[in-house]
Image (cartoon, rainbow, N blue to C red):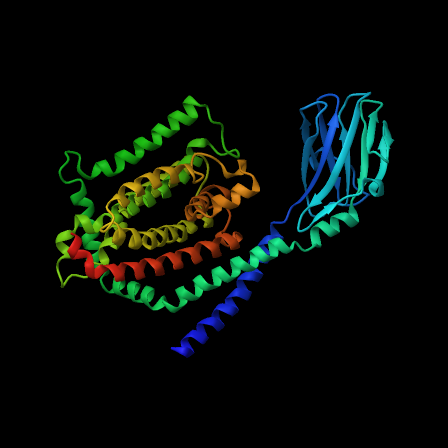
Length: 452
């Protein structure tokens, strides 16, 4: 026992270092430099900032950012996000002559927050009368601007050390390493599950087929309802957003295609998770049989949902081709992302299917979570409208990875390994959830028959 604890501590220490390096690399790769300052003027105007990486480049509209000054006679906060290779900037102080403009608290915010001394970096002014001591500018023409050489300050902001962020990365690394070590030492349960499922694959497929047929056996249209309902939902959303709200194409992609590619994996996940959660309640007569291995039942429901999902994936191929997106190598990733989708559903279902027997309200809660999750996943909206912070938060949702992956395969033509950090995070989350799910399931399984 002592040797096992020492081994786990040693492994956790090694993984802490590994995760720290990965998170730090992610932090550096996603680092952005913000130029911020406070400005006060006597009239509304647009302040355009141009940037370049060396003095030989021309100032161009493509390398510029416009921010509006909207509250005259009051201090307004201005923020411009600059590329990491920026060296010099030019701030156009509106288009009106005779304006009195004051600037203060200019800083660069990156790996480190650096306060900039304006007196040291002013290189050139045009149609501007400047009081360098008080940082007051008076415009004298229709093209007033001031040029700032930020080189040394920019290096400090880019390469400096933010100890608070480093501490956060270290803390996250320790937590991630502890969770991963826990999963590693319980990996045998995951392995035994898949070996068991493979050995009983014929039984799983047979029960899944029967489950799909039984679900619609009492209706006149039978299994047709499995396809009609999702189709009607797609048509409803298409009518509301494209016809009613007149949603435009998303990144030059027809809205209906962009929307369908996102909603098809969500259809599968929501149906499979909901059905698998309630499987032991509906198959209570099998749960009470001592000779039957009930571990297969959540898998049965998850496989059963694949029948409808396969139809809609084929429909996606048809609709994509109709809009000029023909099959290519990127389409093969649908197999990979479908595996991700199935694994995620299995991981969550083993937890919820076991707990719901002891807390029946959980099934209703999951229904609410699915409804909210639909809007918190970029299915009917594009994640490009989010700020960096909220984009990071939304990426914590594992379905973000799958929905975006389907769009990368059908539309964007991006391979999954081009999102290394998201891929690592997704598989780490799934392995952890599956390990916890199996632990919870096997802990509660002996008491299932008592509550059914």
